[in-house]
Amino acid sequence: MKYFLLFTTILFVFILTNPVYTQTTTPATSTPQPAVSELGIEVGDLFGLQAIQNNINLGSNDPRLIATSLINLLLGFLGIITVIMILWSGVLWLFSFGNEERTTRAKRTLLNTIIGLIIILSANSIVVFVLNSLTNGTAPNL
Image (tube, rainbow, N blue to C red):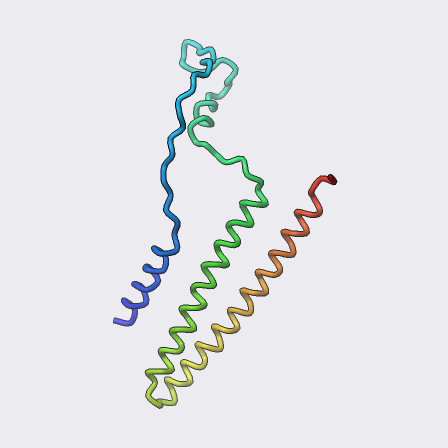
């Protein structure tokens, strides 16, 4: 039963924290069509990849910004897990009813969670330092 409650809580948190993505349509514009050969491949497109490039719609963001966004997402996820673990250790301690073994387990869980939080915050500060160094070190002089 406790695993079911833990699973439902984590699933509920994921559902609440995920943004909603909507599909947007772009208005049709009249662009000149490239010359097409007999095989249906655009002239000048040696491997036929232009059609794929037009359809996959990759972003043109800076890779550093993408890495920063992914790292911030991961650190946010780890923060949520840390809060859940602190609450879980509090529940364990609350329902130990004076049992020394259960109280020790709850204290150990809380201590390990705090150590994990310190590691997460240290990793965050290291990542911020490295990304700032990369950004300032590779940015053009204006």
